[in-house]
Length: 324
Image 1: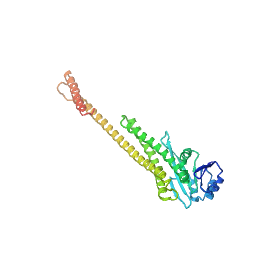
Image 2: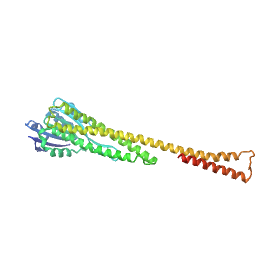
Image 3: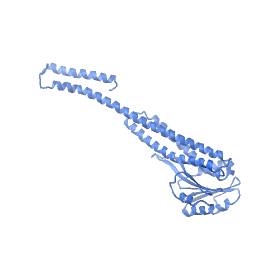
Image 4: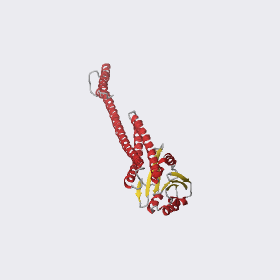
C-alpha cells in the first residue's frame, strides 16, 4: 500500500508527503485542504478515513469493491465518485481502463485506485493551474475529471483513425479481406461500446455536480466543470457516430460479400451452360439409332463443329452480359 499526501493553505501549496494521521488536524485549520491518494488501501485504512473525515460507511464499502460502475453518490457530508481513466488500446483489441474512486469532502479529496494507475498527470495539472487553487477541493476534483476526460479524448481520436482506416480498406477484394474487415469491425464496435458505458455515466456525474452541488461548485470554478461537461458530451457524441460508422462498414461489407457471391454464381451458371452444350451434343450423337454421318468422319466433324460453335456463341453472350 502506498499513500501520497499534499496540502494547500490559502490557495498555495503548503505541505507534501505528511503522515495520514495529520489529515484530520490539517483540514481543521482555516483555509486548508488536502489531497490523499491511496494505492490499494487496506480495509482498516479506509475505516480510519471514515472515522476522521466523516465519510459514509456505505461509500467506504463501495470503495473496497472493484468493478464499480461510474457514478456519483451523495451523502450528507461527502460525495463518492467513481470514474475510469481510459488510457489506450491493447494489441488484442481491449481498452486499457483503470478504476479510480474518490471521497469528496469540504476540505479533502481522497482518491483510491490500484497499483496500475498513474495519477501523475493530475499532479501536473494541479501545478499548471495553481492560479485557481483558492477554489479548494472543487479544484482538486476538476483536475481529476479533466485528466480523465483528456485521456478519453485521446482514445476517441485513436478509435476515429482506426475507423477511418477500416473504411479505406473496405473495398479491397478477396474473401480474406472481407473476413478481416468483419473481425476489425466487431473489435472496434466492442471497444466503442465499452467506452460509451464508461463515458456516459461520467458525463451524467459531472452534470449532477453542476446542477446539484451549488455549495461545492461556486461560480469561479463552474466554467471549468462546464468545460469538462462539454468535452464529455462531445466524446459521447463522437462514440455514437463512430459506432454508426462501424455499423455502416459492417452492412456495406456484407453487401459487398453478397454481390461477390452473386458474381460467382453468375460465372458458375454461365460455365455450366457452356458445358451443358457439349454434353447434349455428344449425348445426341451417342444414341443407338442411325443418323446422317453415323460411323463416318463427317459425323465426327459435324458434332465437333456444333460443340465449338454453340459454346462460342454462349461464351460471347455471357461475356456481353458480364457473366464471365
